[in-house]
Image (tube, rainbow, N blue to C red):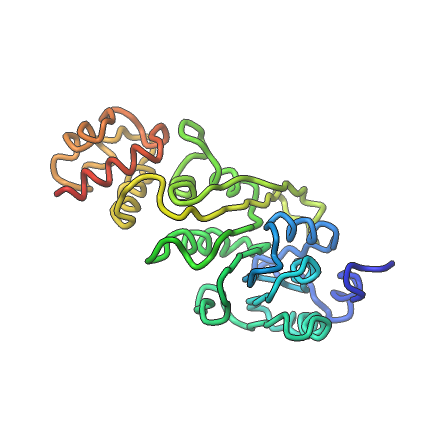
Length: 280
């Protein structure tokens, strides 16, 4: 059966190189090359961009990215067992793929890519949220990346795109939507993966905005949001009382009700709160 690039089917690659998914690494391999190509396409036109991929495993999505014309792909893979399989892809696309046998949480990837940069990854479940928060909270905005196209557990994807008043609305939604647009572009059932996880998955596409939607100091906003959602069942006046003196007065000055709860506060409201805290 022909594949998108003349390389062997992924099941054959996994068998040849003895690659079984490791639970300790949060691995669930996506073997359908039509699906991986679809994920690559959901990131938009790749022909003029460098692409960062985290956790390529046997390289299904890597092959999709290269087949869709990515200018250059840098793949970070912690599992050294995957290196031979990824080396075969690199040989099939000379000069187009660099594979770094590193921990994505420990490496500075910025030195390896040239803007414009898109991040596209089937993220390992155990590090996905932490990586997302890092990408959403750089020291300087706009960030080095133009967009993030990332696969998560469906529950996490729902939290990223959640709206105020919903149970899923929380810190991730505020971080993602304050300076970006976020939408779910694909849903995948457990049986799409090997081994099948116990949960559904979804691909989220996040595009960086040139500037935040509302003015706020990022560090103060992060502190206010964290305090609000750490005790989300409490009213704002109780949840935020340790953030600054006279917090109830500041809540009112921000145009909010001290008896409201964090899950009902829109991003604009949190930014107004952050400005009141910053005012001293």
